[in-house]
Length: 596
Image (tube, rainbow, N blue to C red; front, side, top):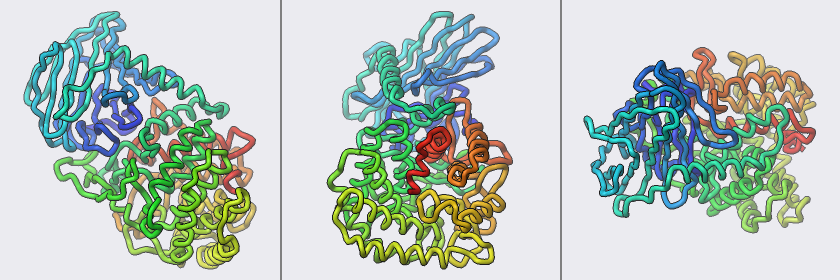
């Protein structure tokens, strides 16, 4: 049985990432990229599907933390025999992808055990393991893949598992370096662990030193920004929604999706979080990735892409993995990439506009891409779509989708007027006016006196909280205030906001999921716009209280079980945390800038 989701911590090299449990087991790792096949898949199956355990043989009290302003994880095990510290990290990629682990004796004599189970191809392929001529070196090979382990600890094979025992005394430092490479190449270069540790610490501390202030929340914002950086694929600038797949939105349920891709709809809030944190280089890289990814025929624009801009993200199920706590199916790829979701046009246009306003370096291809997309959107905005929540049902006229289509033309007009960019502005004004009238007529329910999820429905939707944030209507508008009130009454559970009521909304799946954490941050932002600053701060503090012991958030929270659920750590949750903290701590609030 895997640990609770909140019992894991993240390590990574800005190209892939691993999840380390409080028990000293790395239960999740894909190499060499976020979207590669997993070589440790115990998180979604069993230990036999791959993991790497280093821990005391005796029961231990466990505490852990990240080394200040880094992604270097330090786990302390205190046993009846003594105390040891386990340090886990992945150096920024040089010649190969490497995972390094250091065991340091603190007091007493502690008997330790290591158990390495490498299983390529999502936990199914057993490699051939043999010793090399180098002392303390093992190589594991299967097909095109190879991993090499170097350690002074004597190791032996037991039932297709590499195991070893060793004793640690005060001052002892025992090293483990696991590197990945292609099997047709020489054994990967094994960097000295202490050199790797020094380089990793310099990298993260240098990067973190640029982090801007967020008042009393500066520490948790800095941790969220580090997490966002760790979820960035450095070669392209793409940011994955999460480093995991198929962690369930409801324990035991089928709402299990692959999030190791880049969503266009995250664009604006991601840019605001990065620019607000002082990271303009990363913001520029993300902006450039967006433009490259969506370039091409406007009719073929997707809602998500691979980390290098790949378009084919075909979905399939892994039958040999039982799923996290028996939550099936385990999915690889994401079929939603082929859906029509109109809101992404507005997100892209808003992101590029906010980038211009924020002073990002000009990127020449962007405007030509925008012009082509707007011409296409003018023809399709009136169509039904699958909506922001990617419902696997017949398309509907989702209110938020239409609002974001309005945003696309609104930001195009602003870009033309403020930056002198050429375009058919009067035509855009006409389309913008038509969309606005359409939403106000069809998306507003006069009986409920608020906006609703889709035209003709009686359902609420948390995405409606973003209407004032994107500037569709001012927060003072009675319809906006009534919509916020309705969501407070109808979509709150355990003090947090649901996306929508899955029990009464047909979304193609059985009912039941946690509270989507970004939605509660949106409510806090709406409170800021409404002048309800005390309510905003109280809700924000509740949300920050859901972070695990090392400051990480998942996609959702199950209030009944009091557990994090969904893919972990979730970029959108941390992006939302960063922006809400800036809304609460700064005179110039990101949500007000976006709403102008």
